[in-house]
Length: 156
Image (cartoon, rainbow, N blue to C red; front, side, top):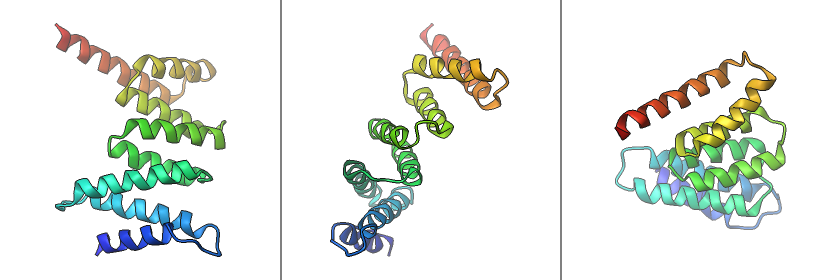
């Protein structure tokens, strides 16, 4: 059922409409449905993940995504471990909302999870210089130190 819904959303996304936001919404719904399929225990998980990422790339290339769409696409990309696409989405998101702390936090989380850690440390230092008591930033700093300790222990 969900694979049929994803195909129908994909068809709507690729069709013209007198309502300019319909194809964009359909593209988002296709990506969402394919993401759900990629995370479910089905035989077509890999194909669904690939289709989801392809829809995200198309939406990203088309431009005009809202911050909420970019946030969701970023989450899908990270969950499907396409970190290059996640970074590209952050660039778009930062251009739409340059002062949004969520964007900076997501960038730091991505850098902690997928590297480069030194970039995450630098960005965290900026946050902590503005607010040394920032609980989120302190937790991220502790996570980085924990990762560094683990890497050092395995390098021995």
